Amino acid sequence: MSPSDSACHFGPFRFEPTEHRLLRDGRPVPLTPKMFETLRVLVERSGHLVVKEDLIQAVWRDTIVEDANLAVTISALRKALGCSPEHRYIQTVSKVGYRFVAEVRRQRPWQRSLTVTVACVVFGLAAGFALVAGAPPRRSQSIGGRGDGATPTPAVEPAS
Image: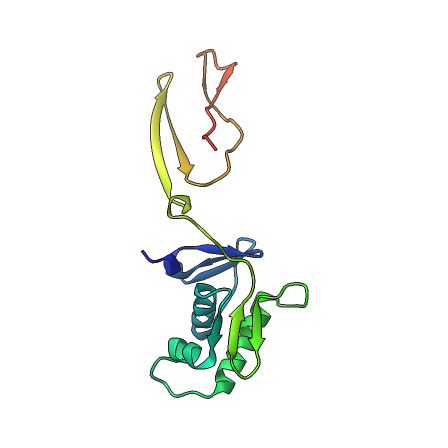
């Protein structure tokens, strides 16, 4: 799996290239295929200038398009991201190309939302729980007791 396939975060967004998904505060952001591919290329090369010709080749491949097509796609992408002077994600380098300027935090492979289901037996009662790698620990939950039904025994919290 290449680094560009990994989920990453910038601002309030979670970008998941392999799932073809962009989430803002956990909610899907609708993107056209060209907008998504443009964002993928820019995020993959974040902090670096991507010249128009390279971006057009990566997004439209063997189709001949004008710079105006790219400009319209970038404009729509900025609108979808809610770009403003306070929240800037894409910088235009006049007559040359674009640069993704937001801080991109890449998710390490062991942090992916990989859910492992674990079954356990506590005090003769079967209980199941999900351990999500990289998730913050949750408060202890009762999964058993002394057997009298009145005194819960707290579960062990995942290590952080």
